Length: 449
Image (cartoon, rainbow, N blue to C red):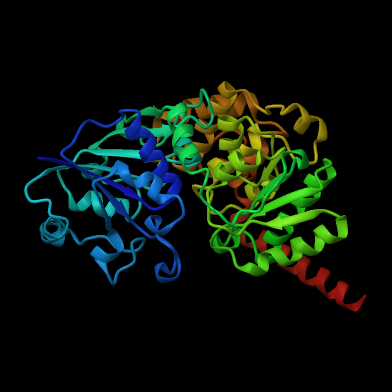
């Protein structure tokens, strides 16, 4: 007997798996189990995948649906993994719990470098692994060094063709080959979800609305709550500036209700008709139901699905701020932000938005992402250093500097680093004392004025 276990934490990921199954990306099996993991900070207050509108349309691809949260209760999926000595015990336990017996098991998981996917992979020690990616992070480096006992079992990376022609960097340190989930099959699966969300507002096609995609960056410590509200206001102003007075705002499912108040006040000031779409549906459902004339966001994957899958006009806001704020440099959100910033037009650039002008050719974007990837994870991808050096020598200019930090380039001795003769300054105690003294004098002078 063979059993395939598919792990999913989002409806978008479940739809990706459904499309892969429909396209024949997986071998036949005697049994297919969907292992649902609710990774919300407080799972008890957030719906799991199998409780969300639209799940029933995807359910028939799997023989059984089981909960990872229930299996490891009271531990949290994002913070627990089995101790090495306990792995055999945990495998016996889940085999009994899910009635696996002595079945040969194959795994399909997302984000293999972190829990809960990593913990599941560690429990089934001999199982072959397929990693599937449902977002833009697959185009960047593996965020953590993976134990070879896990990494060498990964056979392939399934991913959506969100940036045609761009090849993922994820898991290439284990020579894992990427494999596309056919776009046509994914669109067909998303079409099955079009009738979900009965409470969605009605929008006439003639209204040509703009759709704003909210993100919850303050929860990640990237922006403050006020800065994130201001980011949404910038989206609104940009859309109205392009002539879109009918505006829909889809907040992040985890964002508090107060995040929409400032936006509503600004819409009233601008004379825009704003509707907050708080029904928990995929953005792709809104694309099909409302056919927005413009989709505006920061670095949401939804911007690329709107553009690549549905041919909708898109625009970005705030990527320059995010590139500046993301810390540490190896923050895995850096790659999605870089892709969106490099490819999509800024909402204030009316001509670029109208023409849907692509900011960077795919070949040049590939070189950029390999360089950023090396700077993020140089120890995992040492083979990328020559290409990174070449790119920085040829293309580091006023436009591309935004994707790098001089301190990072200096620490890796890459082109663009602080000159050797000046490298002592940040570590020089005398210089630091002078700077502190100058700052104190400046503050004192400001206070007296």
